[in-house]
Amino acid sequence: MKVTSVIRRPVITEKSAVAREASQTIVFEVARNATKVDVRRAVEQLFGAKVAEVRTSIVHGKMKRQGRFVGQRPDWKKATVRLRAGEKLPEFFEGA
Image (cartoon, rainbow, N blue to C red):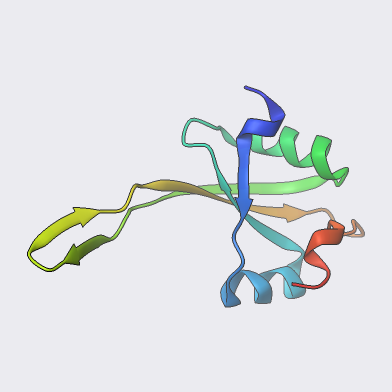
């Protein structure tokens, strides 16, 4: 799997911001078929930071209504990446 197609976008929420400051943890939306090894390689190659641990989970899409019509948002995969001690976070997380 290509390194650039593994990571879709960073997840910026209050919970991920607290985790980023407390324990150098970054949360990403990743491709559904990406494994933990794929995520580790992508983060290490794209950001140049050593990874200590990767956790993945499937986030189920919410049921949404619009009037009498019901639909469902798509399911997506979330990866929580903890960096090794002493590693620097990527620059684009500095202001977030």
